[in-house]
Amino acid sequence: MILKIKKIDEKLNNPLPAYATEHASGMDVTSSSTDDIVIDPQTTMLIPTNLILEIPIGYEAQIRPRSGLALKHNIGILNSPGTIDADYRGELKILLTNFGKVPFTVKFGERIAQMVICSVVQAKIEITDELSETSRSSGGFGHTGK
Image (tube, rainbow, N blue to C red; front, side, top):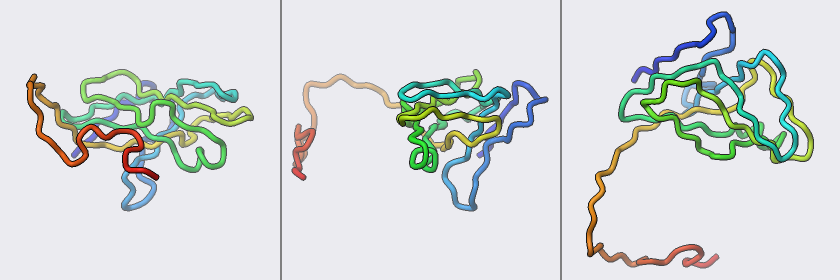
């Protein structure tokens, strides 16, 4: 499949999303802010990427945290995974949250998230009075024990 990407400002030399290894499922996404962005503890900032995606119909882009940022700096994505729909044509921005106790600075070109392209199916909704039974039934939170 082909993922078309347009740079909003072609003069900005921020890296395109890229797979770091041969069998990686996620592409690294980078910040395009030419100004450092400081994320204070317990706050969330919207980080620009300078990218507009054309995701094929039947797919979505899932935006996920980078494990290294999470482990080393307590940086995550509040609505993880974030969903970018196939019909969205605005700038891809990453919602980074500092869950730590010290400020974190995002610099130009820094890898800030991973993007995974996934296929999706849209369900057709059907109202019914009867549903099939399962062995689990309505067992919810914690129903299987520890």
